[in-house]
Image 1 (cartoon, rainbow, N blue to C red):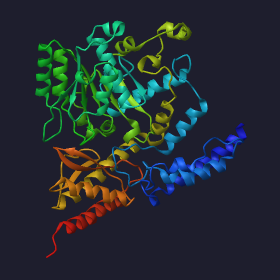
Image 2 (image 1 turned 90 degrees about the horizontal axis):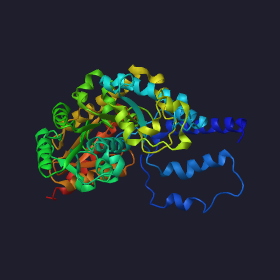
Image 3 (image 1 turned 120 degrees about the horizontal axis):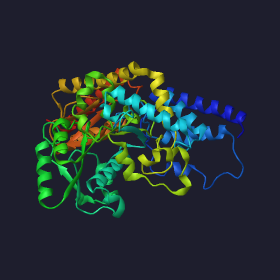
Length: 478
């Protein structure tokens, strides 16, 4: 494909994406076709002779798009948001076109320096402590996901807890990681990968009302493990838990970690974006205690997956834990000590120019545009919660400080499961569930920039009407 062919095909692809976005509202949110549908529609092997872009786009229309779960749909309320935007897509296009492999400063100076500056911009936008800025001992880097950020934090914490022994001889089973019972499953996975195993993770009791970690339970776990000869290595606190968006009490947790010398990692994958709004920064109180912190711009900040922003308070400590420098990577810039080599801040060696899409997003929307997006999501969630609250058949099962609402029909679990199944089967909306206090609970998470009041209202009307039908079926005939 020469540049002119690329230009023509590129215009066609951009037009296809724009048409896709403009028709999302008319599509079902989820595919209703059975497993294997796409596989059956694809040939057994690649074409012998190359095909024009029009043929590929035609198959996107007939094979791929009808068999997707449309995460950008205005009726997508499942999980947490994972939204992109026009500027993000264009930034990714430029990144792909440049084809930079930014493992070292020397292999892409602009790739490294733009990323450093973007993470400083974000730190300022969120009001993060100065210790996370690159002007001091800390700094930021883009990981692929919060899962990777938790793994990297765990490895650095083990390096610290073992006073360097981890790097030389590996981990032993004495070390422990701690998180709330509401913490993300990636914390368990990080512990397994790091060699701690499931037995190395201590689930800490959550308050039944707030679903947030109980600091006194954390202290008790520290004391019990120390008495048994174990070493507390890392605590992962959460701002915006997956089930209910609960916020762990960082001031109390941080003070305990500081007292015992334990690494504190703060996972704000979803809710961290809310801190672009000053009125929502209360959730970050106590962050000055953190050794590391992350949030996902690819969730609620209009930047396409994958893009996790990860900061450490002491970059030297992280690099010491992870750096490996074979002869073939040696270069004058690295040996000068004057540059950042982000290969030392992550598990893989290679890395894409992900900062470009973040740069495009921040410049296109600006601070006020991003704040408007977050405030819209919070307001739409509050609008939905008001409707739940006004219907005596339903109840809210957790606070909703951000854009997630947890709710259920009062009573048994079975009608709630049936309600979710029937509403999702309409194709107009897509919600997911969790359990709060052991009870089956529905979740509605707002985040798409295409979601407006009418979409939230439609979701509520579907839920209300479906509840009417379910309850009528349960009422015995007289």
